[in-house]
Image (tube, rainbow, N blue to C red; front, side, top):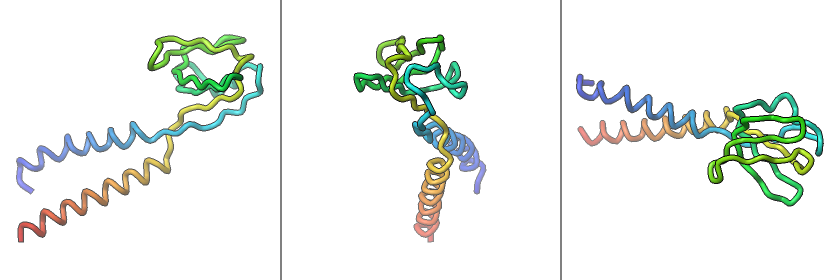
Length: 123
């Protein structure tokens, strides 16, 4: 590997690692009883989805947890406050190791196939 191609390798690997780690999350159910306070597993800064009694799902990043409400930032409207009495279900966005491993393996396979193709083209 010459000096020039080595210099391109590091940023490419960092970009690949960032892509793999940033997208590998899934929504997982949090044990919740309707009308109760949020469980301690949900903290400020968590990304959650709450489903209310009308069937409306709200995705938010938690900023405040009150005794009878949860408040957070949404991607579309800015802020949202949801009364816990109206919440039917809570899901939390968590890192998914299985997705990460599969994505990494698939990208590794594609990189290896591309390298083999380039090597064979040079013969």
